[in-house]
Length: 247
Picture 1 (cartoon, rainbow, N blue to C red):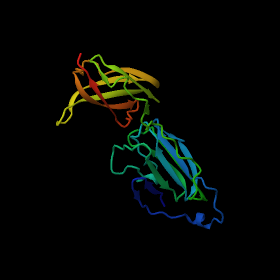
Picture 2 (cartoon, rainbow, N blue to C red; picture 1 turned 135 degrees about the vertical axis):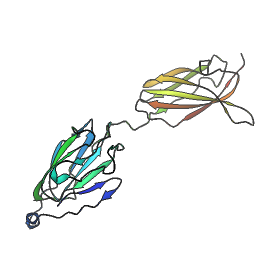
Picture 3 (tube, rainbow, N blue to C red; picture 1 turned 90 degrees about the horizontal axis):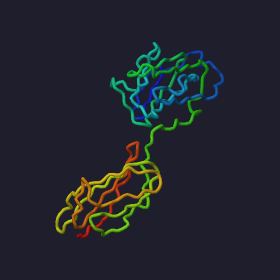
Picture 4 (cartoon, rainbow, N blue to C red; picture 1 turned 45 degrees about the vertical axis):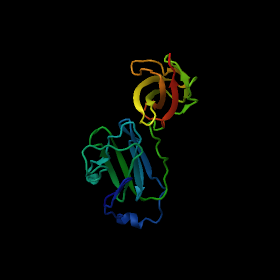
């Protein structure tokens, strides 16, 4: 009599049955299926109580995700969210579920970090496996790219000293511009790059002037501009065409 496990990416059937006393119970208890967050190198909560036939779902919320749910007590041996590897690494938002069909206290830990651990206590009272009582734990990692607005050039034709480029951001980011020279009947040629550290709100930087990584020769150009926030999320590239005039 052992739990059944389900992982969001795959499921493995494990034989299970109810104990005779549970089958004889006339009334089912209130549902107490539980959800546990794995993140910051701990379970939250570290111990949950459920009734017979109910389940527990673990959610990897980050920022650390190199954790497994691996049984250590005698009744949990063989239960593992990552049976095929000694080095678990889950995507943020991944989940793993076990259905418990035998009463007892089940001990689990991470196979890489033994201090990331917890307990599931299963009563002998039949429960309701169809209703969840806990909300899905919120993800603790920023997965949203920054928003760049009002991006423009003060002038689209200017001399080699450059022009101003104003824009607005909703979070701190690094702005990168890859610059390509446009040539008739030829593919654009890479001409250099610029990078700026930008802040929440309105920004204005010098664009298109001579620098260590851009020569600002007269001609027509296209800039491909990308913003990357502090969590390495990137916004869809924005493109600006401009011309540098002769001095």
